[in-house]
Length: 128
View 1 (cartoon, helix red, strand yellow):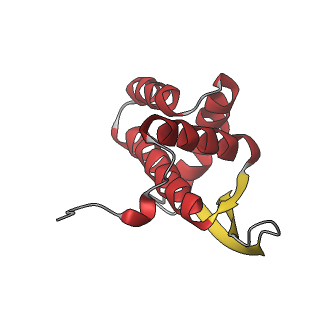
View 2: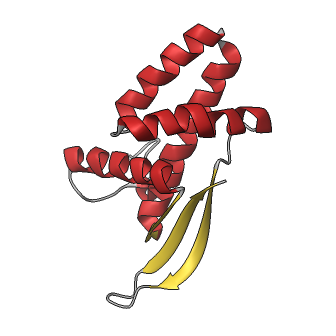
């Protein structure tokens, strides 16, 4: 039996390279605000990005200002590769998400059609 296992959220790149690939996509999403990828990778990226930003918003609302900032920096360093993108997420994007009052739905996906080379479906993943 496969309890609590979602086959749609799997990327077949190996164990270590899967997490590395997800972290690279998250870093690119924060850097550019949008990423174009395949449908399966877009589903994984959307789930990870919503979980990350949701935890950041939750920390900001539930802890004091100093504690929330320290906890958010620790969380961002464990996921986002570049320091510049981490600062952008913490200083620019997070206040917008906190004042919007949402706890999820920070990432939107749009279908773009099909790739020319192999016919895979292209999805645009964009920060809301």
